[in-house]
Image (cartoon, rainbow, N blue to C red; front, side):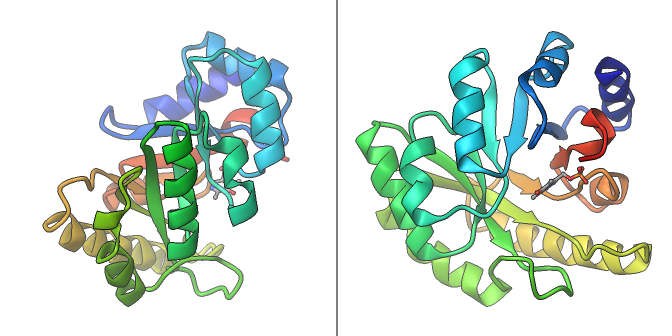
Length: 213
Ligand SMILES: *Cc1c(COP(=O)(O)O)cnc(C)c1O
């Protein structure tokens, strides 16, 4: 079942787009089915759950933190996390820098941009992004490689398309000045095709692979 779902999703994704298989709430047995099918990049949104899974599953899995990350929990994932998608404050980025240094690592991060209409979604606006990027030269142990965004949860495709398009425009304008920029993480099970047509290079897909939660 997982194998078929994964194949279907991969068939829809061009090779330059990275698939993050979102395995939050799902047991290791299902993650291993995807792993056996060749999937290596997995996304989790809770620190404790990601640590537990990373401790028991194969070490060549790349773990992406896709959820809201609290500063006091960065230390638990700093030894192994592969990419942090949801950086939403300079304070959080500084904490990641500090913990990465302790582990002699450079941790890749994405800045989360608030593109949705909903109040509840975290993230910066475009001015705040510029302010953060003006500070990153002093942070030696984080590499900001791009942006992440979540569109409004609506069936109105025009709204979602407009939000993804706006994020891509911001990404492209920043990429011109920031050579490390290479990733724009946008698109989930319900909207990843639209996200890819609007320039996404990384999609985060859970329920289309592992079933509903
Ligand atoms: C859960 C989650 C996803 C995956 O959602 P699906 O609709 O199951 O594909 C993607 N991104 C984030 C930030 C999530 O929390």
